[in-house]
Amino acid sequence: LGDSLQGALRKLIGAGRIDENIVNEVVKDIQRALLTSDVNVKMVMEMSKRIKERSLKEAPAKGSDPREHVVKIVYEEMVAIMGQGANIELKPQTIMMVGLQGSGKTTSVAKLARFFQKKGLKVAVIGADNFRPGAYQQLKTLSEKLNIFFYGEENEKDAVGIVNRGMKEIEKYDVKIIDTAGRHALEADLIAEMEAINEAAKPDQKFLVLDAAIGQLAGQQAKAFNDAVGVTGIIITKLDGTAKGGGALSAVSETGAPIAFIGTGETPDAFEKFDTDRFISRLLGMGDLQSLLEKVQESMKETELDVDNIMKGKFTLNDMYAQLEAMNKMGPLKQVMSMLPLGSMGLGGAKLSDKDLDATSEKMKYYKVIMDSMTAAERDDPKIISAGRISRISMGSGRSSEEIRELLKYHKTMQNAFKNFAGKGGGRNMQKMMK
Ligand code: GDP
Ligand code: MG
Image (tube, rainbow, N blue to C red; front, side, top):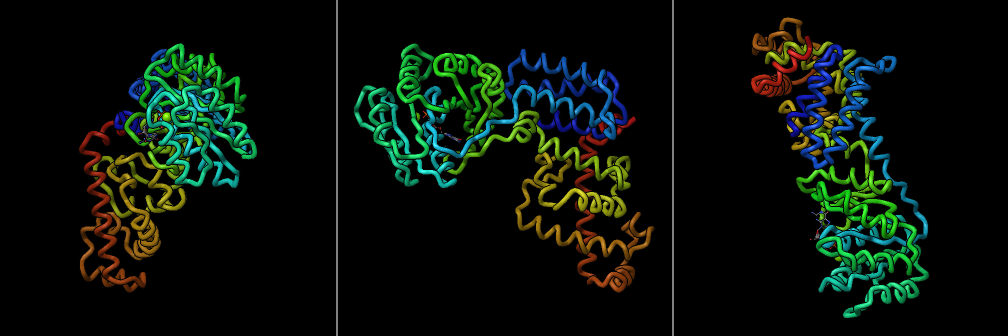
């Protein structure tokens, strides 16, 4: 999946103009990615139709080239479905969680509580799951660890009663969060219970909690809960796993409610406000698509990175120099690397530690100084750089021979990475698309 989409991205980066074949090919790749990410089939089909039409019909915005044009449209179409995420107000409010058993409600109650607590609000939770044995203890323990006030009644069967008494008990708190029970499947008694709790507590927010792996069932579930209580926001959990959470798009379109938060782990801090761009990139199997593209293209314009040669496996010091220039314009290396899709071009920065990247950024500065002291011939063919030449370059640049050797080694590594990439067909595709 990731590979095919990265292939598509490369096609777009390499493509000089947009014709129907290119659009069709890219749309096909995008369809595949979205379907693998569990986005509803009908949605994918409708969206690709619009992307095709718009890409061919609309004129590229002033100053943007045709390839940016298609990516921009893909992005806009996704945003049109997903919206920009919920606006979470930091004020006193009551929140009710709904969702099936195991979706991550109780965990998300703790995460939400922590979120508001960190913003300085006084938070209390009510454990109204009297269905699953152990639910009382689970939330009690989680709350105690976080210093969150917990109200619950062990062994009480009447969930609405718990909520009524609990709401009185926690009246003075700013943010009140109600955990509810789920079932393994949508059942009438669950829906009735949600309706009754909704009536009793009159929550301001009703968050539907969905497991990222929910897939095609998301729409149906969202509809049932929405009909019962009126869902106001969606939380997607377990996005730290392999599931991409594409089902959530159906939930959004079914309820009209925005995605509010995502869960990225089991601990109370593994929780983030929803970020549309990042989510889209993830669905498409790319890194930080939009911003990366913008920056890459911006910087490519002004440097003479010889993509043709690089993709043939030839990567000279001139190319490296241009690349460093490009990176300088793109911002700190750390940031650039983090945007690259994992492993793309064999340079994926994701595996490098922060420390490595910081060190590299530092080095980049003197690498350029060193390269400035080289002759054009040396930059074009570093193999000719003998020990004698290293001494000369060292004198000229004021950097040690050691550092120059290190640069040459770094260059070799990069060159091999590109060779690898070219060997795997990436280069050929890119060249083909550039014609
Ligand atoms: P509930 O039945 O809806 O209340 O679900 P729980 O909150 O009890 O969560 C069910 C399981 O999913 C538990 O083992 C949680 O630790 C786990 N879980 C919940 N949210 C996440 C998440 O974002 N990431 C991961 N990896 N696990 C999660
Ligand atoms: Mg629970």
